[in-house]
Length: 393
Image (cartoon, rainbow, N blue to C red; front, side):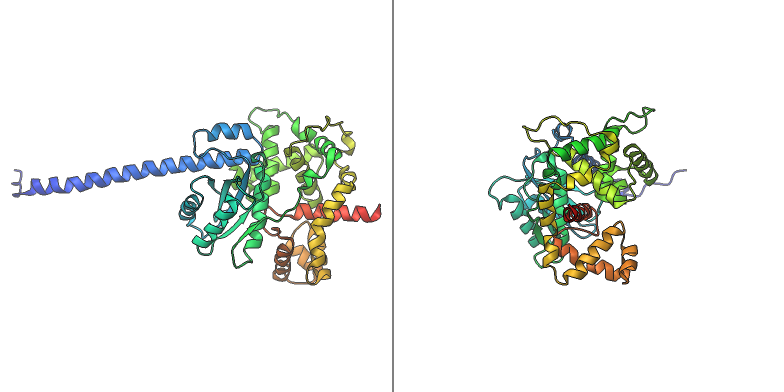
């Protein structure tokens, strides 16, 4: 027989049921909020990826459902903070610029936030004020900010901000704006554009045998991401490392390049940057370069007077660096060793930590990142090669 119900038990159960149901509803709301936040974050990451690969019209379409609208022109800002604090720092960033910027959690570096800021106002406009505010409000965060660039050149802005970040780590203020330096893609002229088109032609016209295999556009995005992020490109592209390796092998075979060599990496990086840079309106259509000379015509481009001038300015900080001879030897040896610290340290006859310290000092000298991708090693290799060619011509 059922036991008698204690007096008042029904009332107690009713009283307990109310807070339990409220807790359950709160948990359901929180789960929905997290799903919405995740969808928003992935949407913003997708828009950033489209901007970084130059797919501007598609980026605008995807961004249409999100806020705020994509600004143009922009400054790109990279904020480095403690692991696990990105959400709080993102809130501080949004408040610092009045919610006008696009804030994206970097898919490659877990401590980085990427901000795409409107570059309106004065030369020292909103972007610069934002980086100062964030550095002041968030203890131990470091901020690098780019020059004013068109939205279509977001990838250039990101590289500039990343290089500025490497310098900001060494300064007490913890924020730095990228120093003025022309893009090599802007000084190669029409011969450089023709060379780039000829080099990339086998890749741009590639048609896979199977529909499920990556096509030309996906391979270009893979090459661009790998050159910028090295092995971290797997996180950026959301692919397995074996998939990345297979794609790079195919790219190298199509272009006739050895992508284990820094020289070929620098050539491909320059060609992709030239392709991503809009040609002047008065520029005539490129005259195709014979395929057999496409991979080897870079030297002729680097001999151009404008490129020689660019190389001089790139390497000028080296002449003013303390211990100029040691700094120059370290840079040349590191680049000759394909940008690898271990072989460079052995060649210099010093320890690996010693070589790393020298390269860290060179980051301050050049105000560019060398040890962490995106690295300035491609630009420095091109500048040294241009100077060598200028000395022998």
